[in-house]
Image 1 (cartoon, rainbow, N blue to C red):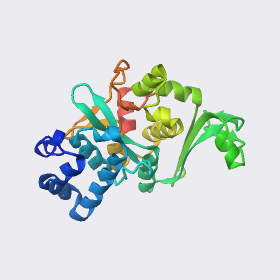
Image 2 (cartoon, rainbow, N blue to C red):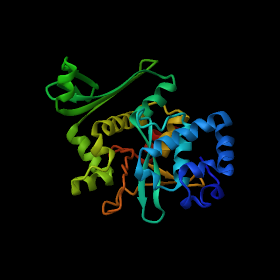
Image 3 (cartoon, rainbow, N blue to C red):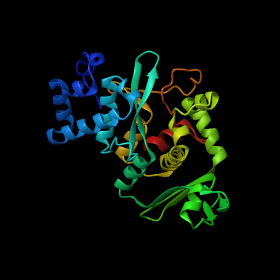
Image 4 (cartoon, helix red, strand yellow):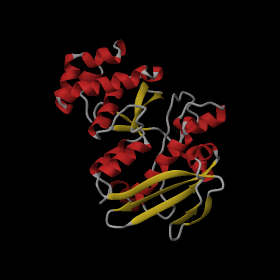
Length: 288
């Protein structure tokens, strides 16, 4: 979502987010894009989301607005309690602190359901002692779930399972061991790698490993095999991006493991199989 430079740069370092959004030029732009009635709701939602996060309050107002407008265009909420998408503070060496758009796993679920193409969609953690077998050839899983919820919640997670079924009967499923998920997180999240190295807990991977694992499973499954609505394409394209004022996007550098200035960044990307061609990957991500 493009935001005019004159609206985002002018005095933003001297203004709180609330004051910035109260400027007539900014309010007019929001109302032009979102609509007058929804504009105030939008403003209240992003102010509320940033108020609870001191690090986010240090980010440029323009980056917060751009990321939030993408979330609004997807009809998703920035409320951390809903977990649909997040405004994540990230320290860019050139631009200073900026807000990154990060889609949550519940956002993937919302966008998939909204398409009307999914009869079933599920993702869950598999606990120790539950897995009997997973047949990757036929994508069949056999588990004996722990019946008592409290006992199951406290049991150690050994893997993750995700599946969907279209309304026309087409099904896909996948299972990853926790060891595989851990290796994936260390490879594709520079923040998580830094957390492990320093024994810190800055990133979502450290704070909510299961939630990020659910997102990874859904992203892998839907981006390869799912029906890609326009909204889903927009969400995947914007996920993990710092959205610039001209509408372009900057993605966290996965190779930048030595960036010691990370506030919080989880550079989750689509991971192609070894035999996938570039054209196959583009088609999986963005459709025909």
